[in-house]
Length: 191
Image (cartoon, rainbow, N blue to C red):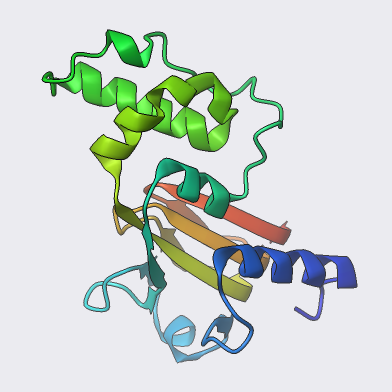
């Protein structure tokens, strides 16, 4: 984090605190270790058998708890959020159709990314359908993706929440996001 200013370091530490990641926990300090030196594809996830770096898996009891972990403010601009058209009362409790699952997933996404009050009427349905669950947390001070390397985030199938101090992608390197990922980064550089 040598290229980070004091306020970047403070923001990084505050996100770690919100995620419950203490300074003494074993975090990936930088991508200069042996795995990054020897591999072209590096996978972050929750399974030691299929991933190069395994995050901290934490239980999540409700959509409100996942919203808190995400750190997305409820009062931020939500013009990009697609809220569900149906109300929760229009859902049939015995129906588990694809359409209903899509409505619940859309409401959950809206709850996290936007203003939860706009989908508050869905909260019980979201919690009974999708929770309890888990999230996979990562804290990485410095990530350097070298030419020819691909770093894959989101492979676990669970919500993955990343806190990066800095990400630098050299020309010909790639950051691939394949799942449900929320990423906070203080300094992002693409060369």
